[in-house]
Amino acid sequence: MRGMGRAVTIMVAAAMLAACGDGDDGAARSADPGGSSPGVGASPQPVVNAPEGFDTAKGWQETVGWLPEDAENLTVGAAAKAGVVAFLQKKGEGYVVDARDAATGAPRWSSQQWQPPTLPENVKPDPSYLPQLLVVNEEGREYVVVWAYTPRFTDEDTVSLVAYPADSSGTEVVAAHTRTVPMDAYGPAKVVDGGNGLLVSWEDKGISHAAAIDLSKDRIQMYDESVRLPYCEEVGCISGRVAGLSPDGPVVTLSPAGFGVPGVWQASDALPPGADLQFVSKYENGRVFAVVGDHVFSLWNAEKGLRKQGGISVAAVHDLKSGKLKASVVCDPQGGSGGLSYDPVLSPNGRYAVGGTLAFDLGTGKGHCLWEVGDQESVHLVSVDDDGTAYGHRRGGDATVPVTVAVGTGKIEELPQDTEIPFLSLPGIGGFSLPAATNGERRFVFLPRR
Image (tube, rainbow, N blue to C red; front, side, top):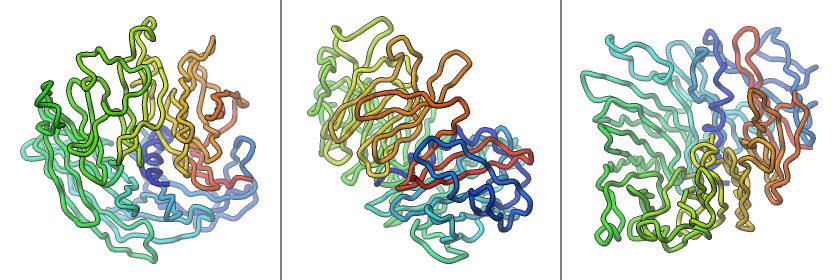
């Protein structure tokens, strides 16, 4: 179940766009329209038009109301192993993590207040400078991380963060790690679960930089574009970038192409079917677009015989530790960033992976491309259950239609127009983000599967 934390926090971005409010704290409550609302007063209960298979008479909900309307910041993360959903809530002038039991919504733990650095007087406030939350996996343990990017303009920018074990308990939990990462650039910064640890990355005048933060040992390793793979001496490499973190070292993706873990594995030893071996060399082809959980997601130039108008790529999934090819599919890159409008996510059991127009069954090695299926518009997927049922929308012009996709077969089924689809999947639970209420709050509802 590793990787769910990063997937969840990324996928909730689209759900948070309309969030706004006045800083009121949220409170967990029953999702039953007839249930009570402790700590929330007379707020109406939401009614969720969920797909079949979810019990809308049960469940729980939480409210987040402190984000401005134009913010895209992430305030929700799920730790599948610990069985918690964590929310970043405003408290006074600072922020706290409120962790709830994923199945019941009961309080599991809450953190001490954290105050991010104050913006310099010469820096105009911007939603991208607000704190964000994500869940990071490292050596089998989950951490809830809260971070904020602070621009300086007259000095080094910084990323400040605090980390809490996801399996904590009680109130006023003290951060296990506190760290400030200096950046010799004028941002922005990208902070992600690198697969096996926390990865902070940024660019300065086109040069890639990264900081790998080891939460278990409270240490940091800095990288720049000089990172290389062994074959660089043979074919030459312009520059490298750390795209993720494996248990044995950084996942390096090179310019113009090629990737792997230095001294451990390289992707050219596990080429996906249909990859073009004549593209400069077999080394200089694949490039990483995401690392999620125990998997590296990549794109490859396809053989000429597979190419169509506009070009075709091969999308592939490799094992993070060994580099072994897990699944691949030929897919038109016009579907977004290699067929992706979202970063990929894993099912809670780790068997299925979906993202935008791509869907993979990692058990059988089969992939599906959902970009312009037949005479229909593309399907873009955002979550997937343990049984391989994926959820998303079919896009056509200005309209979107909710759909489910059976990842094992690629079969698409359209749902009624007013159906809400889950933005995340946890064992036995689906998470839904409802449209903003009249008071500007964003409500997240968690429903059990029948």
